[in-house]
Length: 128
Image 1 (tube, rainbow, N blue to C red):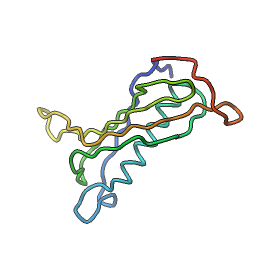
Image 2 (tube, one colour):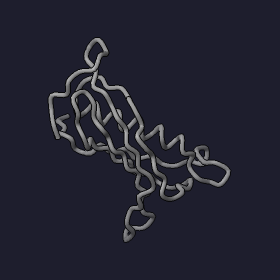
Image 3 (spheres, helix red, strand yellow):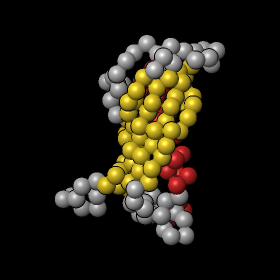
Image 4 (tube, rainbow, N blue to C red):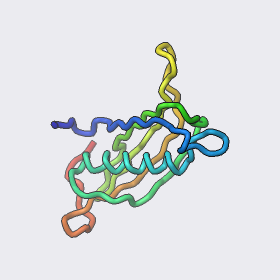
């Protein structure tokens, strides 16, 4: 499989009742786990080395995410430093009808560090 440089990485998840709190909305921690997983894949595909999460700079929730909905998460590297990179992940509520637009439900910003074979920070050789 040939991947284009810094193309968005997409993950689709169905929100099940077992993932919901007493109000019927997705637990924030579940969404954060999905975002962390996707951002790690996104960072890895950018540098093609091991990566590790260095920080979560922020996470914003805009609307409740009820069970029964479908979420599409999209990750993209938005900044590259010497050994680190920032990955933005946006979670979109999939429309229930064809004529509706997706709704931005949440977003987060992760910082990843590229690692060498000894698991030490490695210089990133590519730019955006």
